[in-house]
Image (cartoon, rainbow, N blue to C red):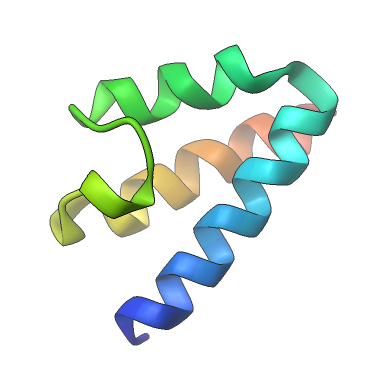
Length: 60
């Protein structure tokens, strides 16, 4: 996947999680990877943060 693809997927999923659980939950996921949003997220963590958000979304 390209960086743009990751950005779209992560941001859309983060928005969905925020709607269900609140922005603090999304912020805590990004904080695990020493970032606050996609823009300062290391590309090494794209798949991990996407997986974390998917797990949270699946609980809702």
